[in-house]
Length: 121
Image (cartoon, rainbow, N blue to C red; front, side, top):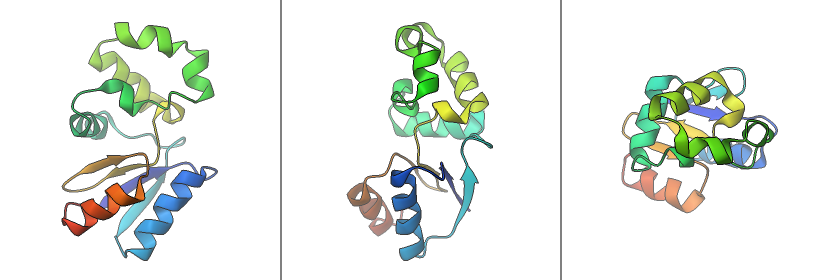
């Protein structure tokens, strides 16, 4: 089952959810703030972005700024960064779709459509 981690007040998340519904892609909707992705799911997402841990972070969010992660992130180990993300859904870039074959971070309709067309969701 595909899992869509999303924040209910996020326009981009609502667009992703609408896309999945209109495309009839089965999914389980998880509120990212209340139930952040697991460490295992985040490692899968990290692989999908070529190991660039920064791409998993919501760099425009208040928690990112409050924790001064712009400065701290380059010095964190992968495990430390994943622990932060799995413990605080506000830090995770959303929407985050964890599929059986692929992981998609953020919503780009064209990219999601290509992935769907390729049968990779």
